[in-house]
Length: 485
Ligand code: C2O
Ligand code: CU
Ligand code: CU
Image 1 (cartoon, rainbow, N blue to C red):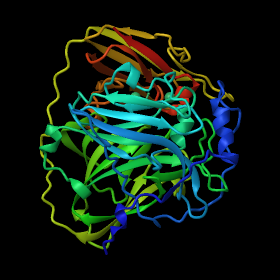
Image 2: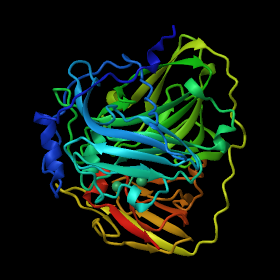
Image 3: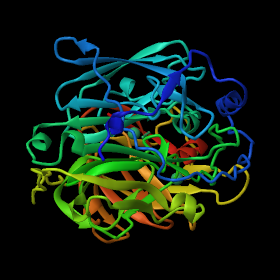
């Protein structure tokens, strides 16, 4: 039976007050210059019943208006209480009261201007991940919005369609701020994408995945590098079900976790057709049984539920990462509840990508962290991040090949460049898999692995970050600055 509940978002009661009690201590601790000395909070032995609640659709944020040629938004970062678990609501940090944040829909060549109002008790900085924007709108860690203040961000959208997302980036606070809720999706579309007969409207669904650890009071427990975040959330709800029609759906997946990597499969091994990645559509669809997403990565995937009889279900499983299998092995359940006409198609050709120019320069980047120890350091080229220090000088309007190596024997990393969408040339000496052969801004690096990528720096000049997108590695120092000039 079809219900209208799929359109409901997580029940939220916005509170006008700051977090108190247990919620406040970790924020203050993280605000200090050194990471907090607290170990992981005791694990609650709560067995959550799965597939009890519908997965909410994320609310789409409407512009306040338009000033001639831009869409103008006002967004308020505010504390809220979200009904995540059965029982007591959870204190969260939000964009506009939503956990996770709302979806912004933007169009190529139509600028977006967002006034961000910080009504939290911590400084914030808003970064639009995957976008080419001027440095003063990039959410640099030192360029923060103090509590009570506002800041206007300008997003020119002079780039092709892409599933971008926005999240906090305040120095030393980003890991905890994002963990507590400060992330949202930003779908940039263009004529190329819109001309394709892909599933649209209610058949195109954003799914923001992440992990979390809850304490016995149902509050988000935060500790740096906690490996016990074993509750998986899809659009803010643990292990939801999602009612679908027996037809094709376009799933816009985001891994918004601090650290966790997902390997997603349908429980019956059924086909997933990947049509896009971080920087938009692939050149051609790619059929697989597995979608891997490290923290910060996105995938655009078509699932045809026509393969399943009405009344049946299929679970989206996760086959990697730390944690007990009953907690981390299943993400959500698709319930096939009705038939529906399906005029959508997956074209054989999705887009063309321009050939890469001859590179002007090459450089090497080494990611490494101390394995073990209470406060492991994390480094890029053996240096801890220092705001203002320039680590890579790049000539404007040139193209570079970066050889990025994970020098750890056990730890995973990934690598994210601000400002650009790059192409992966090879991984461990072999050509990239089809799923990562399109435009990327974040790339996974297994222990010991080397990836070569190529980027073109032809949009803006100035200082931009590059870093491991496992936020707590970044907080520990695995972050650096490039200067394009
Ligand atoms: Cu998602 Cu520095 O970025
Ligand atoms: Cu970014
Ligand atoms: Cu890392």
